[in-house]
Image 1 (cartoon, one colour):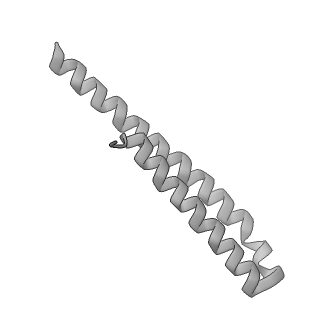
Image 2 (cartoon, helix red, strand yellow; image 1 turned 45 degrees about the vertical axis):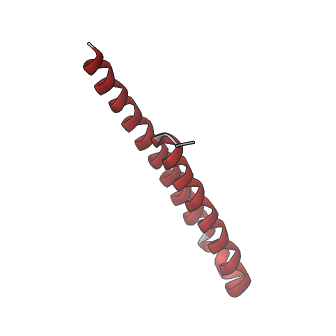
Length: 73
């Protein structure tokens, strides 16, 4: 089954989330307490990036729907 654009962008966002989580875990294992300083920045960036990716996918889906609707008329 093919994924729609919002689903693809959400998948990209989830991949980014897991990448950020892995980076946080590895940096905490290597840098110990120093990694606590970077964790809020990484989580804020990841949240914003996931939102933007999914919003972009929804916008593209809506645009494609409008194109298909105009073609049907």
